[in-house]
Amino acid sequence: METEQEIATPTGMLATAKSRLIRLLGVQEEDAAGVLLSATSAFCILACYYLIQPLSDAMALHIGVENTPWITVGNLILIIIANPLYAMLAKTLPPSRLLPVLYRFLGSVLVAFAAAFLLAPDNPSTSATASNSSMHAANSSSSSSIGGGTTTATASTSFTALVSFGFACFIGTFSLFLMSTFWARMASLHSKAEAKRVFGIIAAGAQSGQLISSLFAAFLFSALHESVALVSVCFIEAAVCIIARLEIPPDSTIHHQIPPDITRHQQIPPDTTISCELPPSPTISRSAS
Image (cartoon, rainbow, N blue to C red; front, top):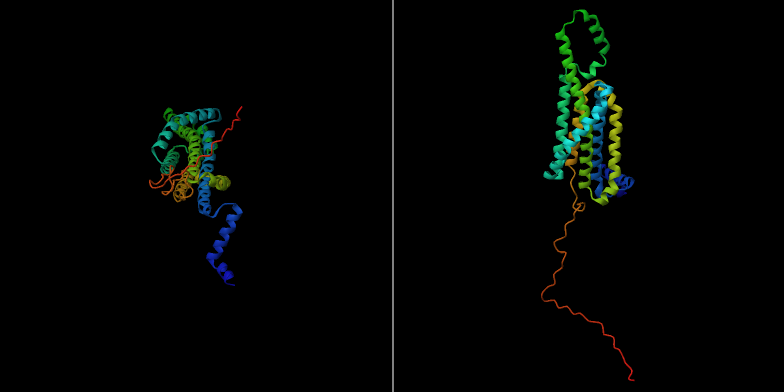
């Protein structure tokens, strides 16, 4: 009866639910908190990327289908430039500092692109819907147009196309360093034994983020247009804060330290005598001839 009363309390119900969840996921009790935080951070990372991937595709179409191969070239050039800088940063900073610094830098670049889209004279999000009206207005006023107006329109279109091209190239490089840094950090936080138990759950959290963001990406883009990149920045910052809460348990370090009472080369106390008994040598009996 006492046990049933303990289970009926909120603390007991939480402990029961936790134990059932641990058995369902097939993890150990010490993995529960870490795998939950890791899966949540993976959710944020994939949600961040799949919110801005449709925006990148829209920007690629904005500059013209015939120019999309140049996006691949630009992405390759960015990777060639960024990879040595990333390697130097990885050598300089410890793993616990590398991810926050890199992720916040990527988030700041997304904020810069969102501001550039808002400042663009012909915003790509509204240019597609207003293309018919603008073409009709241009045709009706073609007889009274002057060269200065044409030059201004061409300059504004070039600026928007340049920003769109840069954004489409950046997202390809963005996804590479976003995911590789995340899994490298997960590998440093979880030992090999833990990775076998929890990495599948973390990947499931990432796929959930991809699914949820894909479902809401169209709605958010129609409501926020290019400012949807700011939502991705919020997901990046959330992932940084969640990963910062992960701590390496003492039994989950990759390089285990030798306890102080155990040394690799055990020294023998000076007052200890070692007695070694040699096996008796075999005797060879020779018969006298």
